[in-house]
Length: 169
Image 1 (cartoon, rainbow, N blue to C red):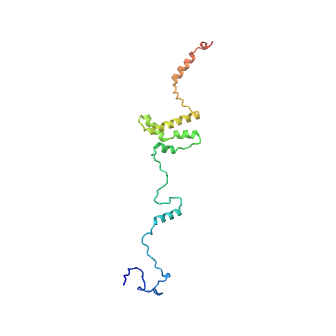
Image 2 (spheres, rainbow, N blue to C red):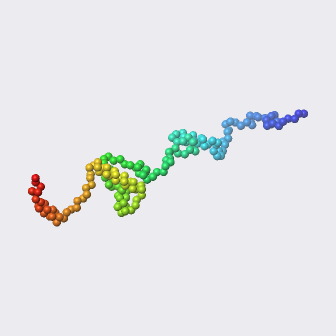
Image 3 (tube, helix red, strand yellow):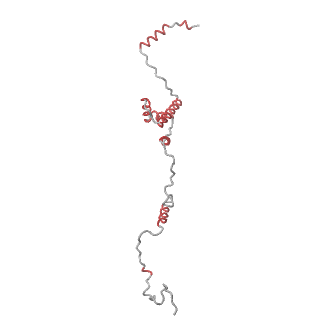
């Protein structure tokens, strides 16, 4: 007799399929869910994007917000906060009321050294103050010292002693 190879096919040797042995399709068993199904990373990405389409498609990517490659200095941050004024008088008043400028000017008056950025700020604000004063017609006149009564009497006596005939032709 010839040799027969082993096979996995169930032939007539096994149990015959009868109507009683076959499970009915209505009696499906509920499988226990252990862990997440394959490909959950991509499926989660799709559900998140469907809810809010503004964000990235792939959750592995970070923010798309541009990042500056140069570190900001104090001057740049102050330049961003620049305020616009309706009139030069308002700007002049704000410069005169600036507490930082007042503190820096006090340090300079005392002879203390200040930082380079602070010196630049003082120079800029004082230059702007000067421009605004010129625009508004404000000039700094040195204060005349108040003369005492003795000096006034001396001037009066000098005036009286002047001979008018010397000035006539």
